[in-house]
Image (cartoon, rainbow, N blue to C red):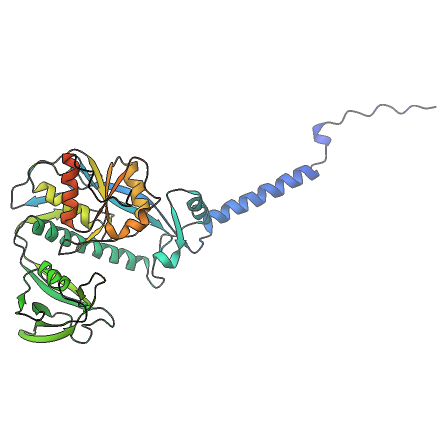
Length: 372
């Protein structure tokens, strides 16, 4: 029998180029690449809210050596501690899309909220619209903060209450016009001169809803009486349903060096920064205090969005105390980081009193949010 010669050994170069294993690996790699690329490119219809930066209103503007708040025309005093305004970083709006990977990461994060895009942004707005609205809100917030702070410190702040518009279907719709000036209000008694927004707010708070009040309105250089049946403010008082653009004669000059932060929710902390600078001693007692809330001309603190993200950002940046609008207390439940005490405030006076209590160690009676 003839023997076959031995076959030469099989080398790597002689192996088949494609095997089931290499095909599977190649397909899996391609699919993974496509999915990863899709997650980076696809923009699902969601917005993402995450903790943004916090800024000390008693310190310098971020990235500069310039004070965030400057006051000229009156004496100022050294401050101590920190009063930090808080922000929310939001993606998913016009011009700032959120990718699928970011949305998934938001769902997995303990400090990020994912919500439908239309819940965070008006679908009709452009990026420019959003930025312009945010800038206008911050500008209005700065004016309100200045007036509220000076009023809290008993400065005389003469104010003309100019009508900027009326609420749709509100009690003053069709009765007041843009450009009107409110000069007085009579609620079943002698007219009260409207020298400030706080005076108007106080009268309306003491007027039951459904009352007929007479407004003294200056229009085209003449004063005209306008009768209005008030609406319910939800707290036993009245609303006019009018938007006010105040003309303020400030007794001191207050300036703000704030960039890349918009919206109205910095009002409370800006107000407290001004109050601290114009008050001997330290409002914080050296503590790091953060907070949020809108402020109107009368010093009332209003609710905001993104409270959970602001709490997380405050604690991340060292805050021990947080001032929150009382109307946000329901949103605070379950979102308070360890080591952060949250105090509910309804007015600027409440916030000042809370800071004084923290400074003096009288914190046992502070209204917690949520209640313990």
